[in-house]
Image 1 (cartoon, helix red, strand yellow):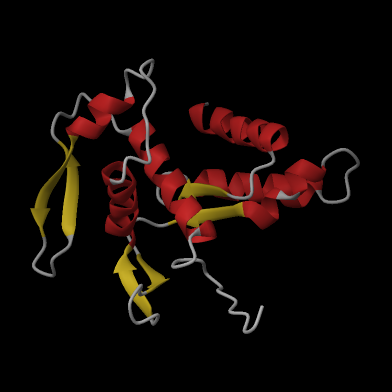
Image 2 (image 1 turned 120 degrees about the horizontal axis):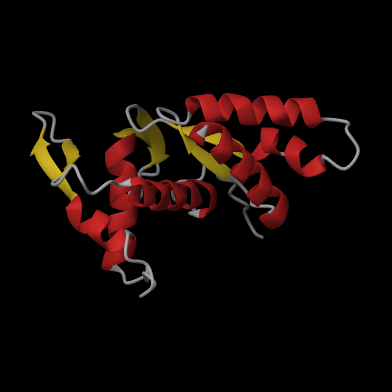
Length: 169
């Protein structure tokens, strides 16, 4: 019942923290996405269930195996990039800029970061990631990467889905 417990946890966290958005992995989390959307639509109009109903507006799937359309920083044109490498590179940039600090009490994330490697580069130039040691899982790292890309896509001026330019404001 791990998947059901995770769905319940998302509902609980949403109610407590009222986040601006929640992203789930489109691959392993696609059933969770469907359950959460069902909970959201079932909650519409139920007194005291506004937080669950708002999931329909803040929940998104992120498909790491697909391409993502973003705005090029130089040309400002919309371009497609591989979603997985875009997500990983978003995290790498924040680490390089020292914008991420890992708690000294977290003894799980650091080994996961150290274990995540590029296995090879495809002929088209895209990295293929893997785990150096299969015994070291990457769930916390996946959650971190997903949170970072969600934040970037929703708040970073270069990547927001809709960018409104105001002249003379």
